[in-house]
Image (cartoon, rainbow, N blue to C red; front, side):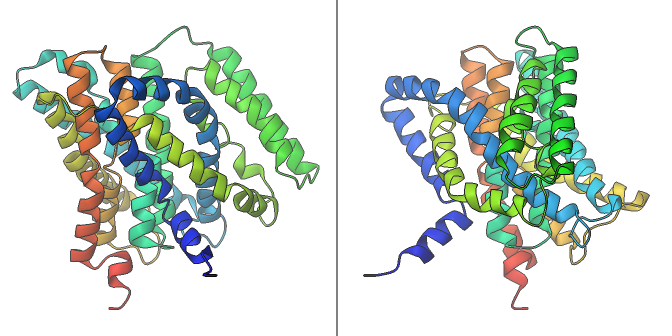
Length: 364
């Protein structure tokens, strides 16, 4: 009997479950809209608020490895660069969105200025892995996207609040989460479960009370896991289940009815596909001139490619759009713009090939 493990490993390595779920969601939403809405609403909390916690935790593990001594992003001059890039990758897309909306004579669209500031960590990570494999650009994109979405969630809490924020309670819970994780590390606890169940639950509650997305709950906890054993056991344990999470995540979030486009579509798409690489590139250039450092073997062609890879807003941009507009034409237009940002991933692959970046320069 033929060994299917290589195919499974390939599917896991490139997160094939994510685009598969997205394609199924698009077909379902456009062929059977009512049943899709019911299913996506039922799946929203368990997958977005709980399941994705473990995807972001695995992403954080790669960042921890990259920023540790000997890692591609070691020293603060390298680790700070993706964070600065994230800021540039938010400001320029928002400005471009406002310019397009103003030029279209649509003042009602102005409320959605934050939509193109979003980066879809899952899809951007998939594209980065596809192009760069194990290059320093992969953790760079991860740290950039995590910082981008962390900043974005703060923007949501400040400019698009959905209810009362209990910041004091959130701060106390987060302090308790970090102190607990530190205590477990000091006690040399090797099992990852206490970190997840105790410290992770406190962190999840803190983010929930603070009005931020709880999917990032394990990001501040993962750095406390003992790096040489517990952290890698955690990665091996969750690597396959996270593929199922990604499939359901895409299934629950990617179903956008392709029924109405307009100025909001072009504003979001322009902000993400053009604004992201421009903002990231300018921010990195200014930061390097100021003294921050690019990772080793990381050229300016790679900067261009990661700019386009980070231009995929998709599910996070959909989340921002829903927070910005009530159901209606403006929401539909901006949602299609978020969907169109998937094209930025294809552009990243083409640009990488033209610039011989990542895997396309390996034989040169």
